[in-house]
View 1 (cartoon, rainbow, N blue to C red):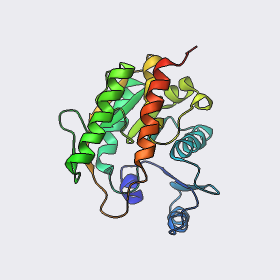
View 2: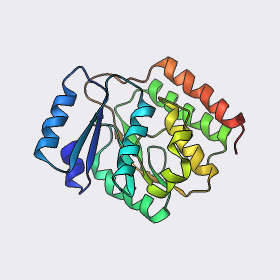
View 3: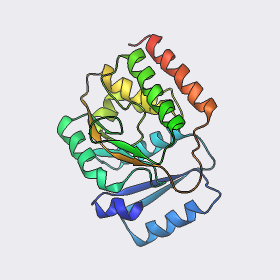
Amino acid sequence: MVAGVRAQGCDVLVVDDASPDGTGRLADQLAAADPGVSVLHRPRKLGLGSAYLAGFGRGLERGYQLFVEMDADGSHLPEHLGPIVEAARAGGGLAIGSRYIKGGGIRGWGAARYFLSWGANLYTRLLLWLPVRDCTSGYRCYTRRALEAIGLERILSQGYSFQIEMLYRCHRLGLRVAEVPIQFEDRTAGRSKVSEGEIRKALWNVVRLRFMRWP
């Protein structure tokens, strides 16, 4: 994944939450061999949302103007990176790699997992009145302007619902949100860390976002 992203001309930050499988050591080796790769080590598993926020914070400190988040398990293909980045650059807000628009798709999922994801997106769109087909995609690009307008210190969600809250805040701020079709590839090894409990918590957080008081 790192090699694929670097081949697209982008720098890479790996956020490692004390992975027990040697991921952190491997990332350090990649960083030692390539100045375009850096690693942010954290002392323990602190959650998906906080990992994204830590990564965005590091990028803001270093003066970057475009910020991509993507999974490193092979599900998000580096060849989609260019169109997503260009869509964010052109719109000035957020670009989402979408599985649920024309040209997008999912490979390797069973019917139950597909229905769960599709249903969660429909629920989110209807409850938050979002004009976006893929509200939960974790492959997306924010502009610096978008992150500064959101204010990372204001984010309340962790885990699965982090993506939804970031999107909702962009929408409420009037930032342009674009969707770019991607082909999502199910991982070939390991298991997803998204549990049923995490999904239930995310669906409840959608209700909280809908009815919370906004400045």
